[in-house]
Image (tube, rainbow, N blue to C red; front, side, top):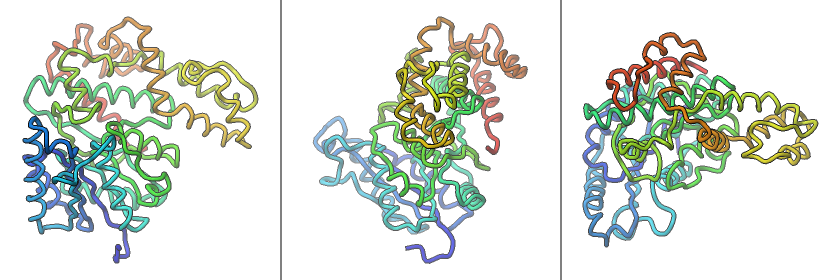
Length: 395
């Protein structure tokens, strides 16, 4: 129980095959100026790996991690062992999503309602005042349930990895920018290493749903439907950029797929598609009175609003119900379904976006001969930095 008269931060960190990254991670934690925190580690893997010769290195790595953590005395910590023989995951519930759920559920059992849960990854870097920035953010607004924290992937010097992470981050930032411009409640990009919430909010949404991948997206989407989130913080977090297949989708798999030349799952969406969603948003209030065709009926079905009308007494409540129905997942489905109708390239779509929005500086950075595959990495970094600087503002 928290015997202090102010909230503390509970840091939730899943670990799998991260022994080599521990010294840097622990250093960053030890350097924090904010001291009222407790770190919870979940070292995890499927139980079946103990009898799989192909996974022996990960098993041994996890054991080294557990031994290392148990010797630490520089800060309060808890080690949840979901790795040692007999403790690993069994059945369908495994992976980083399950690890985050176990961590947050364990924190929830001990924490006070106003305490903060901060989610990180084992390969993530953060500044000495990072914990303080999170604490200050929540203290400024006591009603704030959750944060999708600003992020900035550090480049590695490996040109293949750097090109892949920059393209992936540009995809995410372009997507979020456009959703923010049209007023979508789901204008966020989800990274498990870049989110935080109040314990009371975690309880109100029923905790985290265990997903093998994408648990961060679904978690933040639940928070949006509950009360809304903020995408601002005074300091960013710095996730690692590395090829990884430990999850089914997300940064690591996107980099692997992209490095092989396939970016079809992470396109630069046509600007017209976001305008179609904006048009639908403008029609939503009218659906309180009657069924009207909207551009998003293809993913919701014509007449989808009828059931909502019968359960909503006011237009305001109805409008929220519409956005709950056409949520972040439905938004992505709409974009992916309709993107296939265009034959333009990602490069053409990015330049078209810059020109449509009169982003003079971005137009200059993206010349007509720009190529994600062959243009200099510094050019890609300039594009990433342009989006980062524009998005790094209080909302």
